[in-house]
Amino acid sequence: MISEAGPAITDLHKRALRAFLVGADEEWEVCASEIQGEGDSSQGYPTLFAFALGTMVRRRFPPPWSWTDVIRYVADLRIKLDEQADELNPRLAENVIRFLLSDHSLNEPPLTSANQEEVAGIQQMLLVALTAEADLDDAGVDELINEAAEAAMAAA
Image (tube, rainbow, N blue to C red):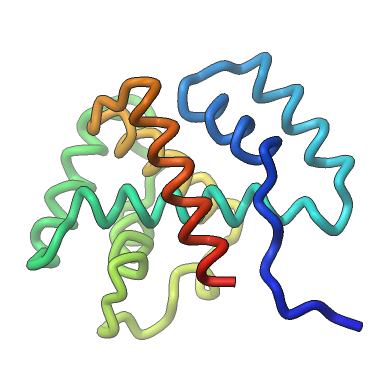
């Protein structure tokens, strides 16, 4: 029997996302190893990550946002990335943001029309950049994670 509920978000998933966001590499490695051992329930972390990214995108681009806002943000991010700018496909990054903002003018969602490894890398770069730009303290990081977890559970 297949469950219709979405993946469970556990304290481990929250700990892993927190470690990722604050750059606690050793803690991230421990959490990632534990998540890999979860089997079918390992989808909780990517779900939490996706909802955290969506939350940060919506915070950064409140209505009314425009394509120009998104294009300018990605261009500025590429400038900040300096030598790593080539790792951020601007069109794909713009489309990921627009998708998360529910832009219905996208012909295809970027999650189905592009290389999934590239999309995952862009999502990671965007979440790190948006979180750094928001200058979240520890309480802010916890608030983001809890808000994302609540949204993920509500969407399930």
